[in-house]
Length: 333
Image (cartoon, rainbow, N blue to C red; front, side, top):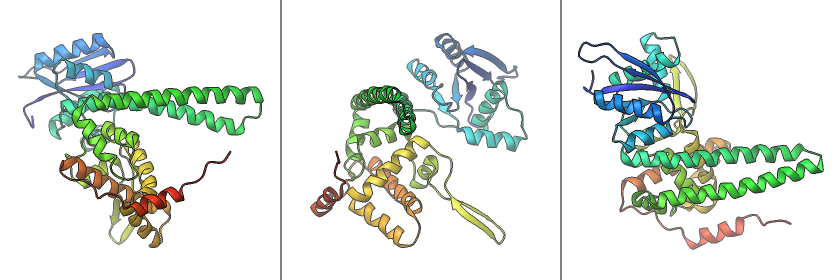
């Protein structure tokens, strides 16, 4: 083994956990199928303690969050394995089969040969925050679907019901956002980062919470790696004399969406980022092509803030604040 640590691979689905315990001291590998619930968590905890192992899981749309919180509560080491890298690792091994049992063994081999980073207590706390932000996103998606339906609905009764549901969802979203901020406030380090992030023009509380929940690596990795984690690094494609256009892809969509909205706001509320965006637009590319490098510059600034506690962004001049207020659209009746 690469590190001498036993890595238990866990493939998480909605109702079950497929467990792969690698062979130890000439023994045989052990596989199990457990319920994705407290009873299954307890069995997995006992297996990990007996083997003195680390539990490795892939992100599975939130189904793994309860498992991570349970393992952390009982002092069992847990690590994330990047799903895309695990699949590419399978291709490199020549493994084209895919089912839950195969995936659990694959995660274990990937962690053993390539390595994974154990989630720290701070990471686990961000996982708890992530559970709330994912629920907020679910509510927002439902609201968006209803608003889109409202645009095409002609029957007055149905339009009234849709409006009522939208008002109800707005209240729930506001309640979840308050819950997220309360969760951050309970952690001194996270609350300090939230406060310092919001000193950057264009970054609000919800953007700061989204970054803390979806990007716990901020302040610990260089800008280039963070850009790839988020999915805002243009990837090069070149072979011989042929070179294709660079594009961004993959990454953590929730963080990317939050950075996009913050970058759009920063064009108006942040003099440095606004000037940078306008210089990019002056070079010829359209809005989307200029906003992505602005997002990278914003993420680099936030990473600097997280990395250096003594660093403070320069305050905005009063002229920028005044121009931003003048430039805002007035509400119409």
